[in-house]
Length: 478
Image: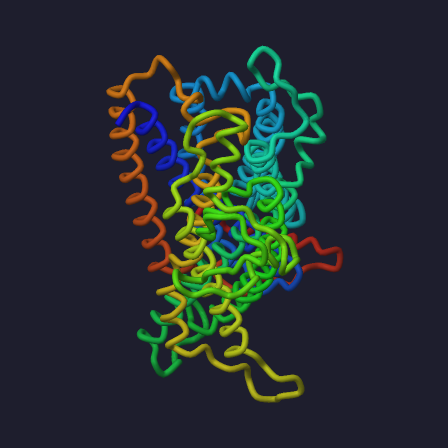
């Protein structure tokens, strides 16, 4: 093992750890903004209570994402200086836009939302949370555009051994980015939906255990209160699942054109094959399905890893141009299975909680077993998303920039094995402590449940939509 191996491990560990928080922040922020919008439109205390409850969970996760994200920038300069030198001119623009435009928008208005509950007019305060979550999604776009350039570099030229950007618009509208953004952001909403389902399922189970006969008045944490956010999360997860599937189809076609080695590794296909089959598991094949998914043509030729290896040796010289085949193969299947399981759970929940039109009976009560299933399914969407990220990044190896810069040529030449080992050990310990802190904070807040939003019912919004009485509400939690 050398410094390159440990540097790759360190970047992989810190990036995956940071990625635990990013999708939840993107999706949960929009969910909280939706709850506050419902309160603004209806004046119902239940929506305000839920906004503050899920808002605190959102803030805990957001803070952890910021802390772990700072490390990423340092790693580029410390462990991957050759990479930074090569891509700096191209990466500088989208990452600067992400920091100066998107992140500042997000953090500034999030601060106004946190401290403006009893100070800002209701409409303005609502606008702050929407501005913050819009900033989160814009931030995701710029970062994914930079990442897409590594897989399919466009709008550049190589001068004196460095990539020099010639067309910013081409970088920002990279076809790979246009497919990757809805795929990743849609998956983020699936993760957030699964998180909300788990929280609601837990609260429903807890309240039914405390009050099995439903005798407690509707107030703090009552089980009936959690039906609304659960239904909203079910709808959000199902719709996001459709977006992920559609954008995944686009991504498969781009892989066929731009990264055939990754596609071949994901399927375990060794040789060029016309009418290539798809294998859900080893030994089971669906004829011509891979060719149809890759090119929308059941008879299309899909390149194989061994034939591509021979072609790359002729083009780039001796070397092994195949990624870690077992990791790519199984990451692809874990992503699909766990993602489908989460979306399937949401569809089942929508059917279980449906209410027929013109039916005077109350809506169906959420079954206890379904609440347990939601809690147990909490890790599934996160595992699916991390598996997809592993497929995306490991499948690109041995390149950091496809066809231009090898990973072995990207590492800092002056960093020793000992230095990387020490920093890796420190990061692992610190990140483990941060993970424990986050888990404790989230669990403590979920177990304690929401506090009443106010001593009494909120007054209805005025005609102009401005609830002046909201200025008198106490600042809770923040």
